[in-house]
Image (cartoon, rainbow, N blue to C red; front, side, top):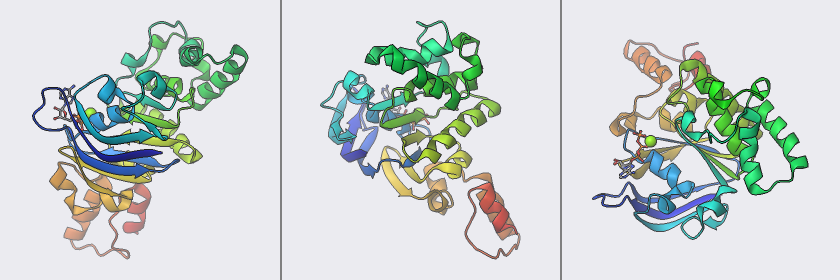
Length: 278
Ligand SMILES: Nc1ncnc2c1ncn2[C@@H]1O[C@H](COP(=O)(O)OP(=O)(O)OP(=O)(O)O)[C@@H](O)[C@H]1O
Ligand SMILES: [Mg+2]
């Protein structure tokens, strides 16, 4: 579904590439998270998958990047819009400002795609239910909480049925309650197994809870790639400026204090921590 081959990208006038020789394949239906310290290249990678690199940011892109078989550099942003949807960190920036209600906001993309009105209403209703915004359907998007606004942004993208959903730290601007609301929607999405989701995220507890696969970026290079339990418990994480989850930290501290678990695997989720400390 996503296929990168030797992708190197430099922003205009940058001395070093923001992405360095990235090669990776993400099959359809996979929920893939990318982690990395500030400046590692997470946002640049998200922008590349959505075509903002190179169509908006320009600069120099080499190698090939394909989404659903479409060559990103060889297609326009408009062509890509039906295939890959991008959700940014700040929900406020994604509201069009051109629509008065939540329902109209979700309709916006469908109208642009020329979806017939009769088909639109059920799709919008379904999406509002999924994003848990049915009760807010007739409110102004600006009257919503941050968590609701971000779910609106996700709904507005998902309603267009993109093959790939890319989210760049969708909860970094939200409080813990708003973050939880957004992640519970993402969890539902992951459970469908149909959506290919690519998520840049700093909150490793959430990554551990539902990503199928974790990529680690460090200075624009892909330095680790594997299942969450393996990547997030790895002692090399700190070399890349990342802190393990609180569960891994607690387990390491307990081992240091002489605790001997029945199974030696370090936990990265609450469920695994319960097993570890049993
Ligand atoms: N618009 C831009 N123009 C020039 N350089 C940029 C631009 N955006 C990012 N960079 C540079 O590219 C590199 C990767 O940045 P990027 O924003 O992709 O990292 P990130 O992993 O998303 O970081 P963060 O955790 O802070 O969001 C950094 O060195 C950054 O300074
Ligand atoms: Mg970023």
